[in-house]
Length: 262
Image (tube, one colour):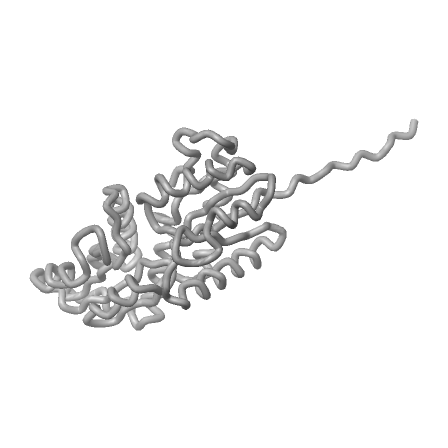
């Protein structure tokens, strides 16, 4: 008995929409595009697109409109929970009623981020023996948010980075909306006898906050995380995590907006 061959139709994977904040610094867009190129190298068949919350094109609604019908996963290029992650992205996903959407967790906290932070510090001149000095410390410079969850996430990353550095004190500080700012954190560390302080730039890409924070550093200041290979792997991890987290939604606000767990 001859059997007719069966052909399975492979569904296209949902589009990965990387959501950047946006910046007036032209280097920010170039950095994000380089990062997404790394993501495409890791997963060549995946449709990877970019949308901005503000300041740069393409804006997120335009990116979602351009996908057409199908499925998409919004992966925020943001390092912790805050207003954009908890409100703006879920609402944008729901507004794209032609799509079935998921919203992934922010990039941080995560060990891959910590590895990228460590390697950026090493690139800037940090040496492991520096951490053995009782006067050594690191300021983790982040954007800041009025959402208390953002501070919780930054403190968790600071603790993880401190462990990676062999027990060096790491203090989070913020460029806006939260305290302490970088100069205040430096003063507090100096009062504790910590005068050899490096600054770890906890920013996805260059921009005004990263520049201002680095300018306040008394010693070495690392570059933003940018297109570090660990960042590309983390983007895909958050994408996969969101896909494993449940069914997509369309047209009504899900609870809890299908935001994948960290």
